[in-house]
Image 1 (cartoon, rainbow, N blue to C red):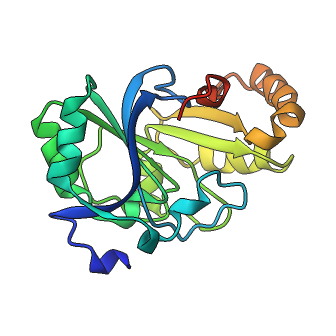
Image 2 (image 1 turned 90 degrees about the vertical axis):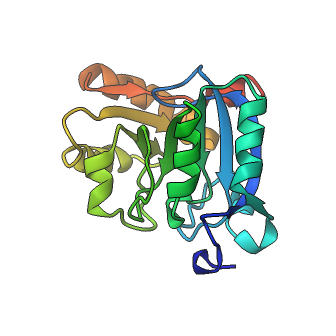
Length: 207
């Protein structure tokens, strides 16, 4: 299944959907309904949802069905993630969510132009596939995963290109947190334009 085989006005390939607490970045700690779309061609070696990459392994769910699941929760906030959710035209999904007074965030590598109406754009660029210029313009937050000493310099290169209102976060790669968190702490103390993001949902043992 390719993105061109999906009628996004009706349905989307979905790996999972669940109501939880946002664990990372600016909205950390906030109740959120996650819609994890299937399909990704970025190929991050440390991705913790590699099973999302092949959209053929996951069902096509109707947008009406997804809206019903959102409405059945107590949420006022939906996070569209992946995979790489910007692979798909999200216009219909985002429009029906907004019609129901739901705030929407997307978590994306920024390697595709966004098609849809999003309130909060979490831009987390990866070295495996370069982002498009639109990502720097739309970014509400820039979240850089630190897994190598060179990532600090790489983070600054991206920070120099985002819009002036964009929030800046450094996040240790989970399996290397013990090594890199002390370095991130010292870096943020020296460069206070940055804040630290942690995967708090993993500490809480929730999805």
